[in-house]
Length: 112
Image (cartoon, one colour):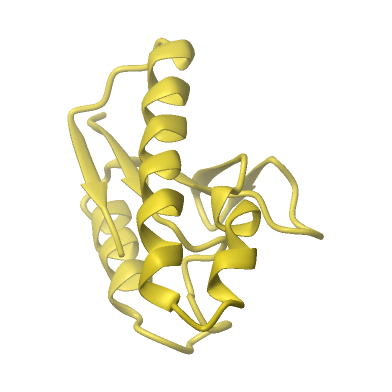
């Protein structure tokens, strides 16, 4: 079975709740599962959600959440300044997780 890593900056595959927000991420994951790919979904940790879980046939792994750390910049009213350091940190965290996990994937997909 081919393995896919799905990476998202959102804690949930539904960015604005079940069936809400931009559904392309959730639909893409479902299509990959229907094509019999093993999907691992990597996202930031959010309160009330476990660091690891199996859900709807995929492994969900949640790592540190840099978006929370840089929230004070967002509250300054200059939202675009918030994004750059948070995304740079997120990229570093994902790369570190991938290296330390020792896992190999046939395809890596990033969502935004």
